[in-house]
Image (cartoon, rainbow, N blue to C red):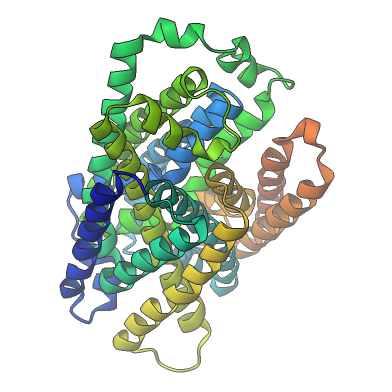
Length: 469
């Protein structure tokens, strides 16, 4: 047990109290639970979107990849996530907000029909359970460092707390805990980066790094990992457009313009804080020395090299960032299962009260599944990339082209989803390690070919556009 346990315990207690208080905001309404009544202003939406991007993967996972592989391997995570927010803000936020959607798979239903919605629901459920697992893993690691308890016990504690306030206040809980948690992370990482640069200087840090750590060869050569790093950036940039938790916040904005501006605001903070985490990973190479487990690099560096209160803020920042993303994703997975699977395929009438009950109840199997993955594969950075690879392969093409191409058809969407997903599974086994990254980039190309081929081959028919839905 360390002397950081009390600040961390207080932080978690405040988060739980905020989350439980938001139960009063629901008032028995599934719409309030799911999209907070579509009433959120710019600064709240922007902050909540930033909280979903600045998570355990973009901080703890980023620093560990920077330390073990190189700057561009770690920085690929915040670069990809920030690019995604700018892309969503420019192309998707306003038209999707204007559609008054409750979930992202509902868009696939209204644009392409029930079968496409079912496929999109299944893939996003799988994808985001993996994403939740990555953030639960980060929560477990940080708590184990602070308390001295085992990773398993800390994983159980963190998962239980997040589950409780998720089902209490739904999106209200997610947004208002986000607002508290992400500002702690922003202050902590900015303070740590400023402290490192002012006390050591960039020249001193760079001089202590192996030559390959900052080499642009990590982006420009196959041997340096360029293909894999670009694949991660592109996968996050476009695959994250299918992020259920991102889009839930977009839908809850009070207007399309609010949703758009919120994405831009969040993109800036994601880039800034992510690069701060990468800087700390670089500084750790000289300060910490050899670490057997790269996942412990950032905690080890904070303990050894930062002043106590800055180290506390970094620890709490990672914890809060991970909790906010796990909470938001856990919420929306359960809502998708309730609305887009259970309700859509049920023969009974689902009342608003029952929908609220299902949305809460289905968060339990979500939390259990994510917790098991976090126990078996506790690798935050890797789990983020795997999660978005899944939807990048099959769902991104139908999403974008459904908005901007009037000839997009149901058959094209289904062919695209199936082709991309199957191709991703085949590439996982068929692409050699020397061509890592090709397994990420090839499937969406095949998905696009299938989409265009089937849509263009279909007999001319009137297709709904997003402007009319």
